[in-house]
Image (cartoon, rainbow, N blue to C red):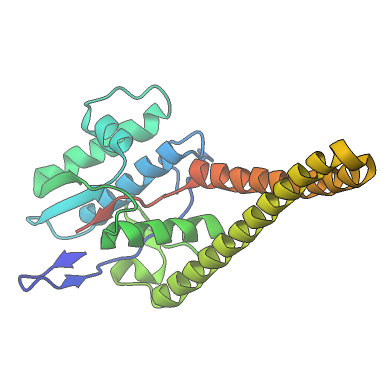
Length: 238
């Protein structure tokens, strides 16, 4: 983004894409696995590539929420995996700093920071599949390399609706599980006096409870998958 003197923020580019683990791909920066950390490094690399492809002599701030990515690229921490990707991004940081004033500034993730929220949304786009909008040395692909994505608002609104629907569904399942457990408890108490009724009630409660547990396991699997592949473009450029 470009921040004007009057405080207006102008989107210079919307970039998104997956972590490329194929070493023969022109989009590879050397990552061997698609994880949250490699996604963060990839995002930082894309931000630096955007600066590298613009005129020299400017001041940039890269806002990041991944302490890992920033520290391994700055050389404060030692990378033990995906060393090639870290080294490439670190070298690119040195290069762009030769011609520009580039500063890395930490912001807290998921804290209503506009640019960070936009980067989070674009990270989802990277997981959804092509078409992508991304950069590589000497070029790139996608129309929004030079401005905001034309359909950003519509896609962001759709995802917000999907999240709200998922939250409502999870709450409904939670309510059903709570009700089933209460019924099971009542059934167990009744079982002391009237064995058969209590047994039937407990069986129903157990069945609903298993559904609830299965739902929770699925939700966790989804969250874990997102974590492994999340935020290809977590860092965003001002």
